[in-house]
Length: 390
Ligand SMILES: Cc1ncc(COP(=O)(O)O)c(C=O)c1O
Image 1 (cartoon, helix red, strand yellow):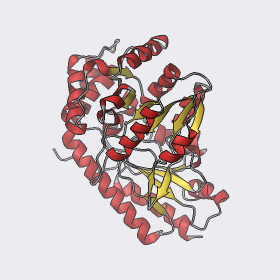
Image 2 (image 1 turned 30 degrees about the vertical axis):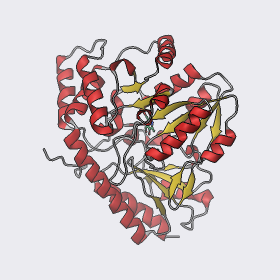
Image 3 (image 1 turned 45 degrees about the horizontal axis):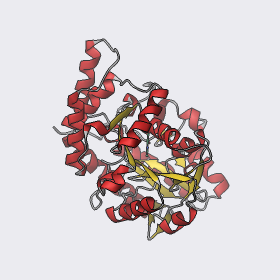
Image 4 (image 1 turned 90 degrees about the horizontal axis):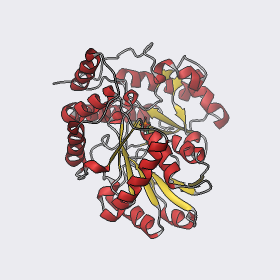
């Protein structure tokens, strides 16, 4: 079946955080929203049908995870990521951020250090702080137009109380799809320095030609033993509101400790819509995903060419994965103190500034390009207007 990603589907008045609640974030409703990381596209038809079947049954009681769900998720990981996972490695949480908060609570004590590779998805900072732990900042380095890890810096910053790293792979917001070599080197360091690895691989399926996502825990059984992998079909198939994520914990000791924390927080049941939608997506969504990736790649090329031609003063860090673009707007001729206001209130563009992600300096913005091309074009035109009026 051919899917249509061009048609604009009105998301106003659907309680969408991205569209209906942007005033809470930007202080105004009058922006074109390209912020929150969900997509302005409908999920694949088999997913919609699965959700409809649950809705029409009309009884929304407590829900468990059927064997068929495990089989679908295990099959997906094998087919798409060449990773063999076992059924007894699964834990289910309503979200990846929920899981990471609970993992920090399970495996770190107040005052312990937790490594973040900044700039990074900013709820990671809250996961550390909510549990009274310390951020150990290991900034990424920009080299030849791409960000790289600085393992020398990391090695120096680890002390006796540094317990874990929260890895973002693929990386939000800088769009890196880490190579197997980079991940192997990081893993070796974590083994040597006794760090636990929480790897957030929620963007694992959104990867562009030329890059390949490697599941960190699949590289080496020694890595797997000390790694917890956070995944979900939510980014891939646009299911974030359905609240189910698959957390993969191969190490029995880590599993036991994590389950104790889950029990203390009474996290044990699943959402019937989330279960049905995720299984349908993993079973029947591959064709849609192929078309989505083509569309996103074309959106990215469109944006790259637009920026090169009309706003070359903006630096677009080419994402290898994710549908998020990291824009370097430091040299567009607008004073840094006015930049955010200019983009949000003058251009009326709802994109997020980089400082909360831990960007070393102001002037960076994150733009979500998972939208129909006409919306992306409108966003770029708005940006161009403020850039060229300076
Ligand atoms: C890296 C990363 N992790 C987690 C999330 C959110 O996951 P969840 O909605 O399952 O908590 C996002 C959403 O943007 C993300 O980019």
